[in-house]
Length: 420
Image 1 (cartoon, rainbow, N blue to C red):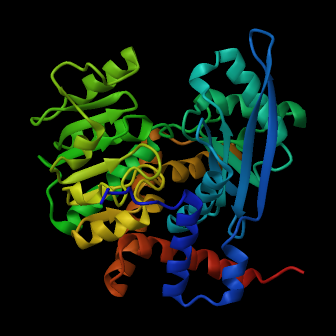
Image 2: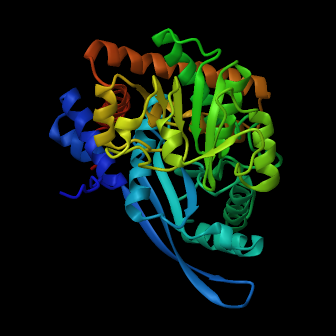
Image 3: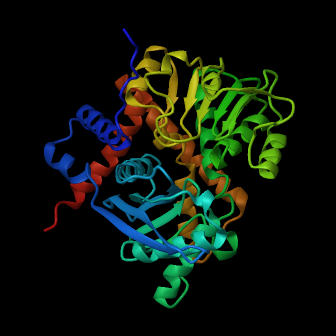
């Protein structure tokens, strides 16, 4: 018989399945489930853009507000060819639980445009961003929905959105987005926040498992903002980052990569491919390397039922959103892998986005060391809260984190009641 690949659920199906597992474990009543399971608003917009050639092309965009029970919707905007309505709904759902896990007063939101930003000039990208911002204008604002950067969006993109919103209001509104340039009310430490959160939660996991971070072998899949910053922090802590990858390939050195040099090489060339002092390996080989810490920091569903059995690590730190499918979760759990779920592991970004929003609203800004100190406090406390449920309920870490997030949103919905 011919072997067939396992059919994986799409991201939104995974998000709903994880909610149901957490709600079942909590014994959540049907009424509360109905109130908090599904998105409150789903906006799909058409984005016509005039290219430099004069030709007009149309892109599809989305903004989803999953839940605003605990505060304004919060979530990034991604520009990527694979953006779909279901993906954005899934990401908004995860953001709701993520904000609740780290106990910041936001709900979940997410946005996206189906496009290839690498094929657009800077002027085309700006025109598309401003047209998209204009289309979602009725939904966003510092009191109701606060976008941020995500895949292939940057502080510059946030500046264009902030300016578009402000021009429509007639005065500058810094708090409408986070992840902005510091010159426009951005926060020090925001760029490194997701990677720092990954490092702090992995450090806590290593302490729990009694694995020394010094000399631990680390593999990083995805060398973008979160992956490269986390890799550098592991490097500074004395760990050996033995492999890393980006969209153009993977590299390996058993003795450890020179991470700052790799970061500089990628900045200069646009890729890790050809980095001196490292061997080229395949993406599949990278995931199968024996290591203590594996950091999937690319896109969703990169670890599936088809490759989970080949993974040999003690800790998986989900720097990306949804990199491990539910089928792979079960395989990894049976193998004894300790998994730090995405809604905990990569929550450093939204936590410092919250700090940025607080600074904007108060017109008072913090030193970077204060930002990092507060971030470490929030992340280690959230890890401890999740670990407590994991140990007491003998749940997986993913289920424990989902239980923590869902329970906090459910309690807020219960106390607020149902209007009218």
